[in-house]
Length: 306
Ligand SMILES: NC(=O)c1ccc[n+]([C@@H]2O[C@H](COP(=O)([O-])OP(=O)(O)OC[C@H]3O[C@@H](n4cnc5c(N)ncnc54)[C@H](OP(=O)(O)O)[C@@H]3O)[C@@H](O)[C@H]2O)c1
Image (cartoon, rainbow, N blue to C red):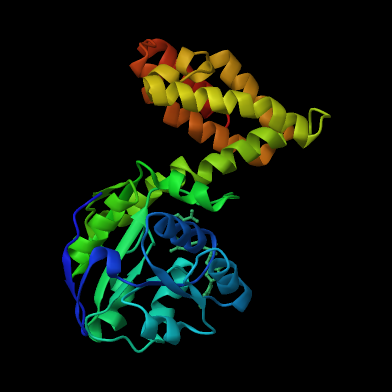
């Protein structure tokens, strides 16, 4: 755990552990992060959301957290407010609140930086962006939220007292802070989407192919999931190159062409995806020592399905 630092707000000087934290927008991340902060001993004292029941959900799980009917009372009651609405709503929510000079306002968007909080900065607030490189989807137990942040990377941009406070907060949650320049945050966030959301998209596609096989999607999920778990484990243990398998990394043009032909017939919407993934796999095939000639055969086989 990081050492406390002195924080000067408009009203007094506090240590990290005394900073009262509020949330506006109690969805997937707002729930998970608030629960994790509570588990780390940080005072989460107020919550508001578009629907009152969402704020009530959090207040029922965090002792000392009060559900509010609107954003302003959360801002009035807290030293630091996380705006955890969808990305597109953050700037609008921020500009609808009267912020105090010296208080902290942060969001958790990965692709954007503190520019979303310009209205709060104009009012003299310290502003920050703290993006956990983690998903909060599918949490069922409050304690899981804290476990899920252990060892996680947080991309942080901040000014004022949040410059030291937010990295300390990441450390208190068991994570590590990194700085990404504002212009590169969309690229950084694309990495998160490829590693998380689009994994779900890819597996959805893999499972969906079990329907044209005449089987149920549940059969597909049962077949695919052990494969996915073993693959993720192999990647974690040995890296992507060692874990990469399949016809493309073996330089097998005939099987790759057969897959593309079958997809074109039974699931044509997935053929372009398979083709692009094959192209993205070529550097791995090269890394595994597939000869230039076999790589050229693969490229020819793919070109036939343009
Ligand atoms: N999901 C993740 O795992 C994850 C990971 C890293 C970063 N993030 C970031 O976290 C932020 C939130 O994402 P999310 O996935 O949690 O989205 P989400 O599940 O859609 O939750 C956002 C919540 O904000 C509330 N909301 C919407 N508009 C609002 C408004 N104008 N005022 C107050 N509350 C409003 C909604 O609450 P009601 O239920 O009350 O309608 C909704 O449940 C985003 O910036 C995202 O980039 C998410």
